Image 1 (cartoon, rainbow, N blue to C red):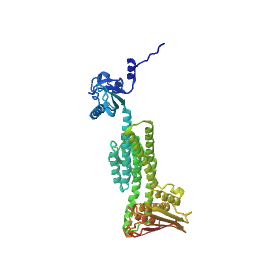
Image 2: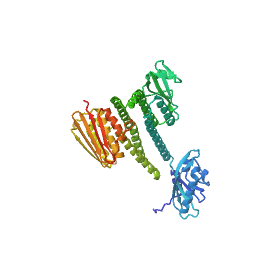
Image 3: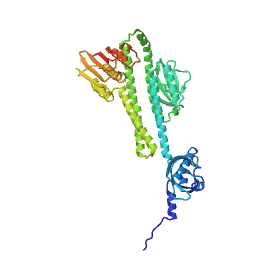
Image 4: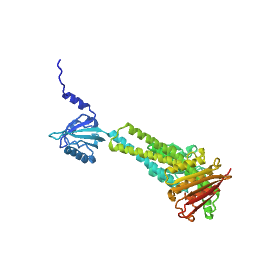
Length: 494
């Protein structure tokens, strides 16, 4: 039997072009379609008669057409392949995203080119959705951060109500928020209110959502025998991240609502005390305890909600990058987003540690201070020297422990921001029924007469008030060019 060489026949060529998934086009130098594979119809809906003999760029989205035509001409002139991404109208009017590779046929008199076209609509849809979610997530994060900061300035219920409504209208435009007031004495609503809520009022729990007739009702709290309820449209929470944001938003609001009554009652006493410069210890301690409580709650909320959400988003993004292959700029952008999320997670972890000192109660004050010194030293230009004496059982209660820890924190912050010191010295010892801290540095110093106490200060003046709240004493000795020397004494209350 004689074997003959077999060449591809017409039916083999037809078989290949019929079943190839990507579109293959052959265009002449006038951009007229000379040949097209059947996949053109399966991807874009046009049959071969709709496109052969027509300009190949007619279905291209108008904003992309001129750019794509110029790229095609450039490929012919330079005789080099060109790759482009662009949008095309499907026959049914939908927009499809395509990626094409133009390859000029060498030494062809008619300057024909072969165009290989891939449908990347799914990939583009994923990229756009990812970008949309990232932007929405960042928007919610920023608004939550700004709202929590704004709440720190709220001292009246009317201010809280205004900020709450303004924030909801801006972040959830379809929410149509309203606040109803129910008088528990007369058992009536003040003004317009949803009467269908009456049967549900006894079941409402502060801060918890109640879904009724496509609306969400939240009991914010009670005040002077009145119940305050927030109502929004259920449909305004379109994504899971919107629901998470709303839950955290309500948490902040309820926390401030509960604190307002106490703050308002104390404000008059506090103003009178400030006028006489005779602030009672219990008021000072209450203020610092409230501050610490808010720090703990905010740290817990950041850790349990925001941090976990960001870590989940980071994991999903990492899975997408690992599972799918993205080219060029898209891959670079996704990697940049992944890096940004990682840095954001690290920053939130640092903020949580700053708000709530890690393991302060579990490992004790002295070990926590050693860890704080070591951690600060890693990112500081000054050298920290510290010594502790008779410190095996320092004997401070929780308020005193936190007070001393926060004072050391503030001394370190002050040194980093203002002192320009090269060396810091801490000496802590226990003497019978008191704990003494000596601090000094070789920084630029300042005029101590400029140090005036203020509740808004978080610097050295704030330290004075904190130590006074513990019935202790603190003194500052400094002058320009002479560094800073601090001595504080805290009595041990058994």
